Image (tube, rainbow, N blue to C red; front, side, top):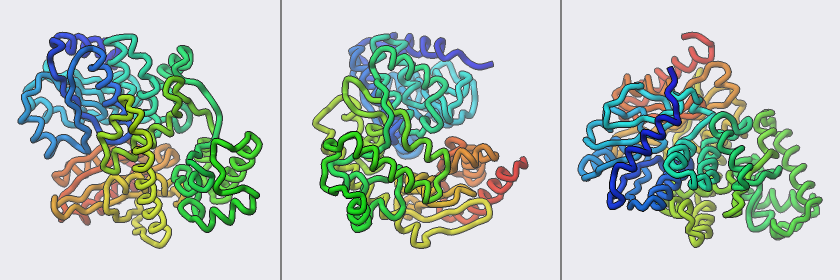
Length: 451
């Protein structure tokens, strides 16, 4: 029987309120856009309630991060966008904990010290209908209804987890509808294209990724010349007719490159803008993702906490981050891929970048017939960090990367998990080939529809 999310949030809010305001609350969240946004919601909630907080944004807190946590004297820890897969470890910390997660869970039962608010245990699909940030919002608004103004931040997190593909739905949609009704968000229809000049916007466009155009200055100059557009024109100076002409060209460009209908439909779509901060959700999510995955996690959190001075610095970090992604995508174009029956894979210097490159390549470069894996070898840690991405079409055929990563990594004394469409794992360096063989067999069976 599904848990009631309202009841769980009330229990968690009561637990938090049982601590005096002099308590420092520990917050641990993931370092991607959803995790950073979740941390932003929670830290704002705590600050408004009079609590001090100590926040860490981690790739995984249950190795070296766990060692740090268990040596701290915490009275309450809130885990966001993680935790359901590591409940036994969290219980070893010896203090009360609140877990806000939308990934796969190990067990419904927890000790009395832990309140687990997992979307999947509440009848909500954690793949598409709720994210770490929107679950954090559920707790924040239960604690104080005035925290409804954090809806923009929460939905930016869900957008960062690509939960807007196919339209915002489920629990996220409930938050969206309320935010529009309360004028916290406004709606517009447009193509995702931002930058100081037209040339900059096209050069750094990675999602959509215009293969042959993105990251190619000469091709951009030539293309804009044919369109009779000045590359140095400020994006904000484009009139509606010119913007429409540019958007139409780019849309047909993607069609000619063979992008799927799902990608085409998501290119020019409804977008939502924060009425108070004047940023569009996906734009903000991209900045958070760039900060988190390019080594500037605290900068991403400062954006969430309303530090306007961080914006220009974050844009600079984002451009550096996107250049690395463009370099990786161009390497894939130059035969950097390895093929197996059930998957395609490549090697990356960074697990974070590898996962992003894999996601973009699945949508804009490859034919989408099988999932793409990024493997990052960490010699000093004696580990291989794996990130993998699929498509909604593959999920409909039976793909479940989260289950595959969890099962195989556990068999190989590692750890893994995630969603059906995107997941990750960490395994010992010497077990790389064994991992590839096992995951290939599982994925072949999944895509054939066999158990």
